[in-house]
Image (cartoon, rainbow, N blue to C red; front, side, top):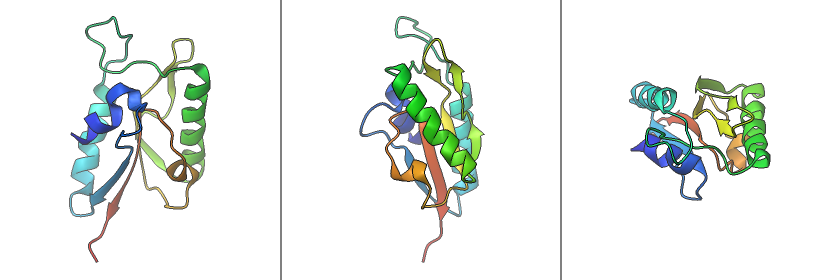
Length: 125
């Protein structure tokens, strides 16, 4: 369910679940499952019945998503899946799962509208 919330419509909807707050007790299991799904999604155009995730709306949007991911990685995030453009000419960005992410990082503060999940485990207080 979490993966579907993130990657449906290539994450280009305002209701995309791009931030995952996961109980620390199950974090590794949940995030591994989401990353596994991200790695196996078949990219393709809407006319392809096998396609599970399509291209981003424009080259500008693809560059915006890539920039946010690049900033995240430069600031110390770790990509468990994806993290790069699949084929620049086609407009695809690999479904991405980032973790080890600080709350002050830019990618978390800005809406990416792409197939990217920022995830971290939280401790019960």
